[in-house]
Image (cartoon, rainbow, N blue to C red; front, top):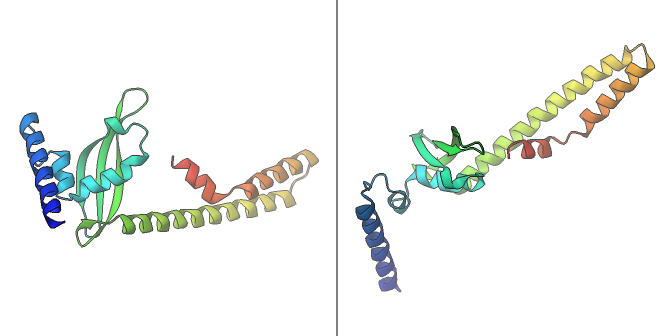
Length: 165
């Protein structure tokens, strides 16, 4: 079994070397090489880029490492053919990309955003209630009650989930 693993590793190295040689790409720029050495920027990009609409045109522009996170600036073509930059953030664990920690941090950020949405919704409801108490025409009161019902019906988690796509 170890012989098979060593053979597969050697084959992978040989294929990466041939790819680099034939395409005149330096080893540092080769995506295959970066994946092979477990480059945190490339691994973060690979994990997050699955959600992109136009993955074929996506390219890493810059990577910056912090103590416990990595920021990948990438560019991708939009539906009009123009390139634009955006970022991915991932978690690092002892300097290496960590998918479980990235998922955990994304969930924590989502919870924080939902809580902020709920607090804003509550403030809006309080403001609407004050306006309802002081409304002087039936049509204005009806309009404010409809607005109140719309605000009450907002599900922050669903709203934030759909707005990020």
